[in-house]
Length: 103
Image (cartoon, rainbow, N blue to C red):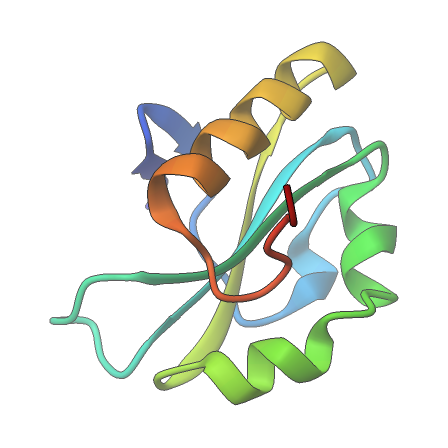
């Protein structure tokens, strides 16, 4: 089932990064202990190839340290202009513990 993150529809979260598409979009790394818990946003980013970026991501170790259960991955596929805006909106509102931008 798809999920909404800050009013944007994302694909159903999956445990396998192989399910992500090699397309332009915003990715979110999520975690939770069980289906009754709310999702915890661990990281968010944008890429011209979500699948490739996630397979080779340099923050994987942060995701493992910050998770509160199992890791899940989801994406919202869109063009470069929109993906940058969506990524920043989620980062500004949700404060993911991995990949914080320093101002």
